[in-house]
Length: 255
Image (cartoon, rainbow, N blue to C red; front, side, top):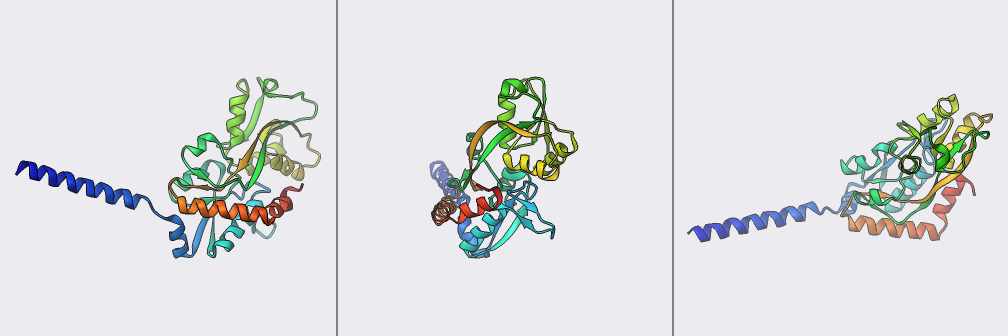
């Protein structure tokens, strides 16, 4: 009886484990199609990837990319406002289905989330006053360098400029305000943010000093969603080949 009981308990435990494993593998793509809605996290505080126009309408390259994606998937778009530090947590906590928010593909991030085939690229740069000689990381030693908390720019600058004093702002919009107001003279960011600063303050003494890194941008998603990842990869490939993603990027970034 003891052996039979032990076998039964073991079998039941194995069945429960199998059932749990099956439930753990959800098909998010199927769920999105059944709900007829996709929740895409977009950072509208990161021009020109995402920002709010004079009519208080979200616009930008990532906004239009998200709109095109939802349209091609045949579902409604629910845009979820996020910031740089919240992009991956929003995926992990289920607040968003995917992230289209200038999310750089890095080895660290690939440990916790999956990425689509890159749909664009972004430069990580250091910008500062024209009169200040900055040619590389060594020239940042002892200087205050402002950046956006949780961004790839933050990571690259922190690792490279070990002797610098890093000053972190919660989002790109706050970083732009700090640079325009003179609170931040040297910034580790993207060319788009440098242009945003100069757009608000054309007389600002700010130029790009050097490129820290060139990295691809991917659509972020939770791990273990093979159907969704396959669809997104196919979507990026098709819309790169037909020129739609390139047209969106050029519209907001030039080139």
